[in-house]
Every structure is written in C-alpha cells, then in structure tokens.
Length: 524
Ligand code: NAD
Image (cartoon, rainbow, N blue to C red; front, side, top):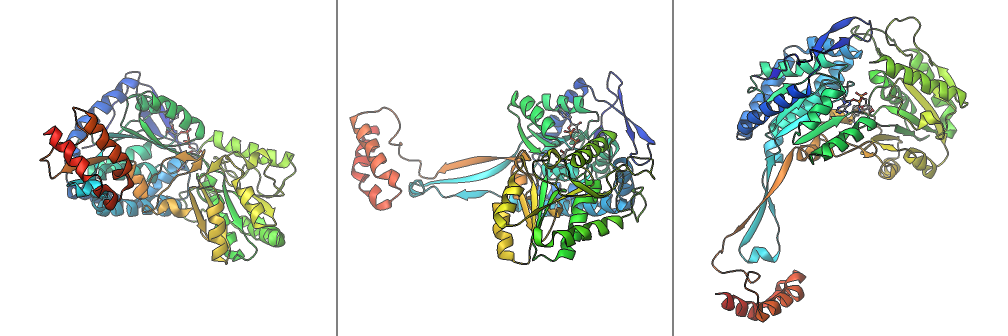
C-alpha cells in the first residue's frame, strides 16, 4: 500500500482552490521537515525490497496502475481540470492518454532497455578479460513537479523510476495537491507495496525538506529560480538532479509552409493549457512576404476560441492557474504595448468571467530586444515577429537564455532539417509543434537555462539508474605484469606497454611478448 503523510506536527495546511471559480477544493497538510525525513526513511526500507523484484513484477504493478486510471478517466480528468483550470479535453489528451502510453511502453520495455551491455575492451579481451555494464537502481527518487501538468509529469517519472527498481517520494505543487494525492491513491489501489510510492504535500518548504532529506536523485520540474536553489541545496549531499525548467520556445514559419496548418498549430501551441506549457509557442517568427496574411489568419482563428470553465467539453481555453501568473501575463502584454508592439486581439483579463481568465492574445510588431520576448510569459499570448532570411531567423530563434523546444514549418524538408539542427533547443520539430513530451519513447529536456538532464526515452531512463561495470578475468592463472614488486625489468615492460600495447594493434603488441614473458617469470 502506498501512503499519504499524516498531518505535520505544526498542523499547517495548504488550501487548494479551483482557479476558474475561486471555490475551495480542500485542504492538505503542509509536511514538516521531520515528517519528510521520516517518509524518506520509510522509502529506503521499501526500496530494499523493491530493488530485488523482477521486471515482470514491476511491469504487473504499472499495468495494474494503468487499469485503475482507465477505470476512472473522466473522474481523474475532472479533478485535473478543476484544480488546474485546464479544459477537460486537454486533461485527457495531454495528460491521461500520454501517460498511459508512457506507462505501457516502459512497463513492457524497461527490461530490454536496461539489459546488460557488453563492452568492447580491445586487447584486454585477448587476455581473457571481459566487461559488461549492468544497470542498478539508485534508491529513492524525489519528484518535485510544477502545477501545469500535475498528473502526467510526476506520474510518468514515478512509473519510470519504479520500473528501474527505485522507490519514489512525490512532493506535488501546492497549487495541485489533490492531483498529487490522486497519484498516490492510484498506486495504492494497484496494490503497490507499502511506502514504495509516497506523496508528501506542502509548498516550497516541503520541497526543500525533500531535497535536504538526501534522496538518491531529484527530478525537478519548475522555474529556473527554484531549479538553481534546488541544485545548490542538492550539492550539499552530492545528490544528482534532473532539472526541467522554463522555455521561450520559437516557432519559425517559412513562406513555403502550409500556412493553414501552421496557423492551426500556432494557435494550439500558444494557447493550449492557457499558454502554461514549458514548451508553449512563446515567439512566432513568420517570413516577411506572408506576414500580413498569416497574422490575420492567427487573429481570425483566435477570435473563434471559446473561453470558459475547463469542465465544459466545448471550452478551448480555460482559466490560468494562479493570480500571480495572470498578473505576470498582463505585465508582459503591457510591456509589449509600451515598447510599441500592437495587440491585435485579446490583451486583457476576460471581463465576462469571474475566475482567473486571460483572453487569448495575438501581438504583432514585436522585436527580440523587448523584455517580454526574452522572459518566459507562461500565458495565452502569441507574439509575432518577422524575418527575411534563414540566417536571420536562426539567430532570432537562438537569441534566448532558454532552449527547450522549437518548431520549423516549411514544405522543404531539407531546409526544415537544416534549420532544426541549427536551433539551440533540446527538441526541435519540423511541421509539428509542442507535443513530443507526449511521446514517452523520446527524450525530453532543455539546452541552456531550460534544464539539465533528460526525462523520458532511453536517456530519461538512464537518469534513474547507475551503471555498474562488471569485469571478469577468465584466465586468472598468471600475475599481472603491473603488479608489485617493481624492478628494472618491470619498468622496461611498462615502456613496451606505452609504445606497443597502447597502440591497440595486435601486431605491435606482439613485439612486446618476449619482454612480457620475462616480467611474468620474474613475478612467479
Ligand atoms: P516553481 O519553481 O515555482 O515550483 C515548482 C515546484 O518546486 C513546486 O512543487 C514547488 O512547491 C517546489 N519548490 C518551490 N521552492 C522550492 C525549494 N526551495 N526547494 C524545493 N522545491 C521547491 O515552478 P511552477 O510555477 O510550479 O512551474 C512553472 C515553471 O515550470 C515554468 O517555468 C515552466 O516552464 C516550468 N516547467 C517546465 C517543464 C519542462 O519539462 N521543462 C514542464 C512543466 C513546467
């Protein structure tokens, strides 16, 4: 059984609200440092059993957890929508479906992906030695996610960590604690061994306590500022950290692209989850010759979108998650205005709705030297700039401290691939936008300040294990020439190692054999 922490000794609570209505959803305990440390100790005990389980057993657990989710897709989607504000459709299409896919993939493939790997060790092989890598679990993985994909991100990371043989402690965002607790409940109902998956609720202090409790890995998703704090705190225990941080992701549209498709993609890429995706389109660059026509297409499409309660099935744009985030978006739009950009549609809090709703906003005449084109906005804004040449747009796209994702739109796939490889970002898509976090088989992570390390894919799985090198000498009958005691014969042999053996050539090494034999005889 997985468990949820009892109330902390301070008895402080976190209150969770529905951002679309302001209604209180409920209260959860703010875990104290002491209770987080106790959770870590229980996790270590759970890990000592789990690490010995077979991949089959782990697979069965993850598949049972999938069954629990499948049995209540709509309830889970409603909870995600209520606590985060996102449309119900997105809770299913962008969280539940992708994480179910990720779970089946790693459940079925982790054994193969983490299978032992033989190493080529050159001439040592001829001396009867062999080397292989086996992948050992790490121990307890601490997961500290953001609020914007409160279900799929921590659950996906937890499923991968469990498949690799680790125990997991999740500290959900203080804005979405009930979705976090739901993950704990799902594992509990799937029959997870006691304390293998624990949820500790609370705000930043609880996250900091989890870092201080020295898990064996920290998987963090959130802002650059918090990422830096966590990296510094983790360094005290030499805990390794994967950091999934912010983005200011560019979308590059060439004049030869399918403009209708590119416009549809831009709208989804900028406005899904009310623009609160790390890989949202936050800057769009359109080739100047088609800029006017394309920008109008964006405005027309934006005006057709329905904004409202996420729980209504025909809502395309829901509420934002917090007042603080909404204010930041408003500030950025005001800055755009002040700096001379043109707000073509939207540009304000939705006056017809009471909750945290900001209208989807299209802005033209933007330049990279505007502050709002450099800082992450994380809201439903789509600033549109123009370019004239491939070189110019590559340098515009790369003119950012971030590098999470980017997209390139053109019918000329050669040009698309060329430009993609010149853009500094962890994932670059050609004629696609934003969605590759949903492909669990592919690695996810950023260049520059967008992060360190990877989640998902083989690269992400490798973050959750430690490679162990096993080296075997099948001909252990003679002493090694480099063992003690040393002598002039020994030193002459080592000169031969440097000159002949280290060439990697069998023919050259053969010249060393008489000297080697002399040395071996000396040792025997
Ligand atoms: P945040 O940094 O404020 O908080 C993230 C998490 O860290 C929360 O659970 C919070 O309680 C915890 N936390 C806060 N202070 C802490 C501390 N000192 N020690 C330990 N934990 C602490 O971020 P947010 O506002 O929740 O999320 C928005 C950010 O997340 C955006 O920048 C977005 O781009 C980024 N994000 C990145 C990805 C990605 O995959 N790269 C995905 C989603 C979101």
